[in-house]
Length: 264
Ligand code: GDP
Image (cartoon, rainbow, N blue to C red; front, side, top):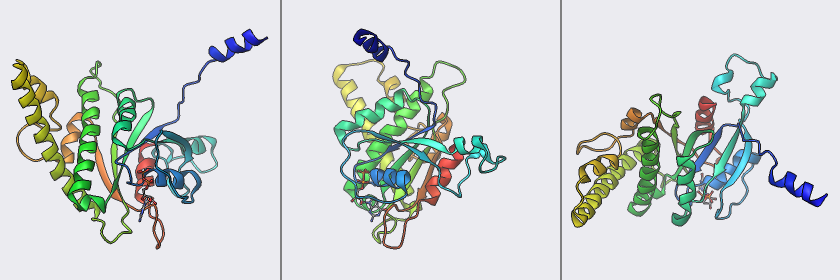
């Protein structure tokens, strides 16, 4: 009997998940785990530093209608099914980010990326730079996924929501400033990366530095500043919406659930 069970276990059909998946990305401390917990139970529990990805199965809260279900009524099984999604929390620590990148290279059912930002920390240089570097790399991975696609149709778009979190803090920047600051900081990251490539290319005497540089350049060419709108050209829409997962005056995550609903 044991061999049979073992065989069954080893060769059991792993049913691939078909539920739309949203990845939570962003630097450590932004509030990813808090948002995951809120979405899972609709209560905020204390969070611990996440060291491994965690997936939860969630249902869109009442009051938000999935884009695909505008003509269905609540109670209809298809409507209820369309409200379900998976939320994957990823560790934000430097070394553990590789997991997130792997997910981007081979995304299974990834319907969108929620990049959680501490809107208070980006008011300071250190927080801003860390966030901008991480976001630059995420957008770069998506851009490469698009430009490297084998089919002429291109891969399915993966939109990005920048969730400007912790707006309950008086030190938090409002979303439009978070956007401007990030665009400015990403412009710098992109220039520095290009310079780094150029320097290493010169050192190695490589011949197609120009090509490499082009491939590693986020958004439109040219020396101008980076804008999220430039990502549209490679099929990536970037939206920024503010909110807070925790706060003495209550929680505000409506904008983020609205965005998720639009992708469902
Ligand atoms: P993660 O590393 O991105 O998963 O971040 P966590 O979810 O662990 O949150 C980091 C810290 O920020 C925790 O102490 C949270 O309680 C706190 N936090 C998360 N969201 C908010 C928010 O909206 N407002 C405030 N004031 N604190 C928050």
